[in-house]
Structures are given as C-alpha cells and as structure tokens.
Length: 328
Image (cartoon, rainbow, N blue to C red; front, side, top):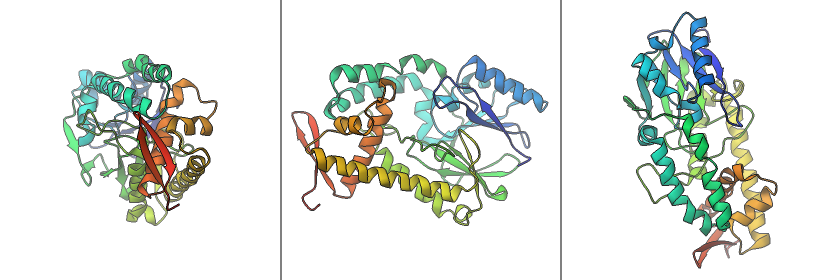
C-alpha cells in the first residue's frame, strides 16, 4: 500500500514494538504513534524524516484504543504540532486522565479480585505492579470523537468500525479501497489479544464483560462484506500484516471456544471453585506481572459459560464460587 508506511515503534513492554502507521497524503496523519518514551519519540521522528516530514507537520493522530503503548506519546506530539486527535467516544475520558482512571481501577478491582478468591497479599502485588508503567503516557485531549461508521479521508477513506472488547473505545479502521483494515490490538497475526477487565466507561463500580463483548466484535468484523470475501489484509498493532484477516478472526474465535470448554471441565472437576483457583490450574507458572491478564482471561470465559447457563455463582462470605449448572 504505497499511500501508507508502517513503522515499528519500540516499547518497554513484553509485547514488543507497536506498529505506527503514517499517511502522508491529504494532511499528515499518524495512527498509534507509541508510548511516552524518548526511544519511541526518536523512532517516530526519524521515520518521518525519511519521508521528508517532521513531527511539527503532523495534522492528525488516530488512536485505535486507549492503551499506553499506542497513545502515550500523543501529548508531546500535540505540543509540537497542534495536531487534531481522533479517538472513539468511549475512550475520551480515559485518554484525558489515564492516571486517574488507573487509580479508579485499583480501587474497584481490589475487592473484586478478593471476591474471586485471590489472596489479599497477591491482590496488593498485582494491583501495584503496573504503577511504574503509568509514566509512559500523557493525558490526551481528544478533539474529534469517533463513532461507528464515521469516515476519515487520509488520502484513502478510513471507516471507523467499533470493536470493543480488548479495551473500551477500541475500533478498527477499514480501508475498503485498499482491501485492508487497521485492526489495532483487536486482531493480531501471531497472538490472541487478551480482553482485559476494566471499568465500564463512565462508571466507577461496574466492570466490563470483556470477553463476550470481544467475541461479538470479532463476529462483527466477519460480517463485513469486505472481510467476508476473504481478501482483506489486517494491519495489526503488533507483528506482521495478517494476510487473511477473515481466517485469522475465525482462528481467534475458535481459540476462545476451545479455552471455554477447558475451563468448563475445570469447574466440573473442582466445584465449587473460584476463578483464582482455575487460573492457577490453567497457568500454574504465571508470574505476578501477568496475573491480572490471567484473571481477565479466566473470568471472561466464566462469563461466557454463565451467559450460556452452564455455570452458576454462589456468593458466600463475599466470595464468588462457581459450580456447574444442574441442567448440565
């Protein structure tokens, strides 16, 4: 795609580099420029210089979702360029106050994780470990809020496709004329994104049911005419391009269906049981740094089983215990 340049930007996270996309036509547009680190800024600056442009010339920044490895450096870009910032409506508040949002999540998930069977000292460790990483993001004032179906002309038309699940306010950009979709972290080439638990946008006391929402968003992508014909290439937020987006989406759905059945078997084997015990059975060597994603994964599949009336929850002494439904 000659109208676009993919730039892998370094991050301090285990996921590795994040893919930034440059669109130099019809105003200079940057999609997902990376975290707030000097290394990320320098890589972006050098990549723009190679096409004869500078950071001060950036007119628009598009953000696929409000995770710091994708948007953290945007505040610095705005200081130098006065660029307009485009993001989904559901991401606006989190982008404007990422540290405040993180503290709200800490307050909510402490009692929640206890109710899921996680020991108190582990809960404290899990919720405090991410604190040093919160410096890799600056607040962002979104100037242009996006909704499903909105179109942005960056030399090609990019249509916003709302795909919540991996994060609230996640969306993809469909470039139908180029048989391409910029998928952020919604679909990736070599890993399955974790639909992380978080707060429902606008709420301080309600969590997302992230995995059921994520699977709905995957099916939505499959139903798009441009993807259904199996010719669309996915330009993901990490890794190499996805040569067959349709098939990769189906593989991701199948992965979660298989894992759901594995967790259903574990509930039946250990009932009544907690989400934490199932996580330890599924991932016995998981380090503390990965326990929140691990709990998100297990609770997401338990949500699916609950939606299918295959498990029931017994709330006993502020503890949620899962059992197989009698009809199963």
